[in-house]
Length: 95
Image 1: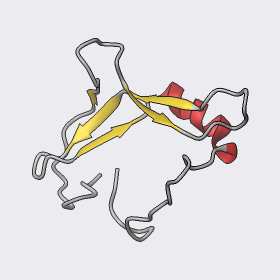
Image 2 (image 1 turned 180 degrees about the vertical axis):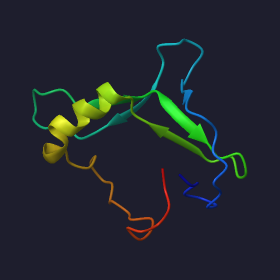
Image 3 (image 1 turned 90 degrees about the vertical axis):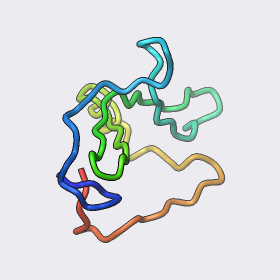
């Protein structure tokens, strides 16, 4: 596993990621609402690694959240007004 920013192989172990002072405050990955009365698909990113050379932070989902994302993944759409951007070739290093 290498850093997507600088290419370093010096990444930290997996750590718990919070977005506030309370343990239950997590970073959330949210998608566009699939219908008027349906809730927005939301997934907590509560784990992360950090690059020890450049400091880049790589949040990711735990196994339960990953399974939930996978179950609805084909039906998700981008949030309104955002264009997807590809940051590198399919053979580029990454977590």
